[in-house]
Image (cartoon, rainbow over all chains, first blue to last red; front, side, top):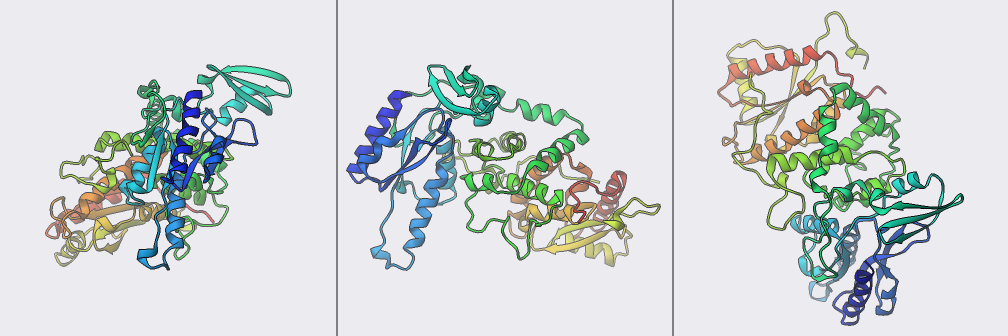
Length: 334
Length: 145
């Protein structure tokens, strides 16, 4: 991990000095414990700020998309021959590269507009889990080998790193980058992909009323702050359905069905596009369990159409393709 | 919604989203052949099932429909060649997903019905009405305000 961080700074410096990229999107140390925040490095001398540690939680593909699109929008009134291309370097783990594969497949930017600094990933710390493990306000955190040392007002507490990793990371199948330009470090050891759908399988077996009760209970927490949408790399529409108002998909009343509808629609937009990076869960201020529902779409996409979102460039997203032989058991025949 | 409370003679309201080229013509044929089918269905004509946004189905349930029927051309017979094939993938995932969160699977029905299948259309509507009736008035996801 230390090696990867050192190599990352060195490579970032080289790329910026050689003007191969205009900006490097990476992580820098945050002001709060357990948090490495997104950082935008434009000068080679600033590259020393870059870090790579288990506190880098956000999926940076969102920023690559937004930066490139902002840049393109700023050039629409220029003559085509005067337009300049903006190349974005991005520090990417497995899920970030999968999001970028989705962007590339959906033709959001060209492969030549991004330089991917691929880092092998061993998972990031879920702030919610760490807070639960510490049992109080965390004032500092440090990684020591395979342990996480949490400082609280009551004293120090050491927990194994593997116990506070995000749920998505624990069952990650793609912890090494899918597409890469500059590789930083040896491939990481695999996580536990076999357990990927355990929760979904268990939830499927519950009776209908219990499932609905769980869904309504979780969605009652949601306050429609749209943080999940804002952080999601697959949610990049210029006008989101949540803000369309002629006609409005989402009502603005306090009725629980409006919140449920927003979540159902947003989650369904992730059909075949969710890479399970866990960013939405990490940023949710209310701790809504989105993963149980998002993972179902992932499972269906794999079982019905044999695709994993962003798994490789060649296989198209499941809902952009079709086949005569698709399964049809759900079709009603009187 | 007030009129959706369980009553003695409660009749379900069903939204039928049907494609212009097959099922709508099939419904037309059922009509001109004087085939009787339950009047609970309200048809919405769309150019193709591929044009149906899955949100329409969710929104219909929220706005007080007790059931939704989506019907289009049989696979391979789409007027636009592949609209219903793309739709089939979407609806497969949608139906699984809505069932997963706990909405009654009987409320959402997908079927194929061609322009010459007037009797089949009548049968489908009969079947769907029965299925929806068996689950009573919709209570989940319905907007109360």
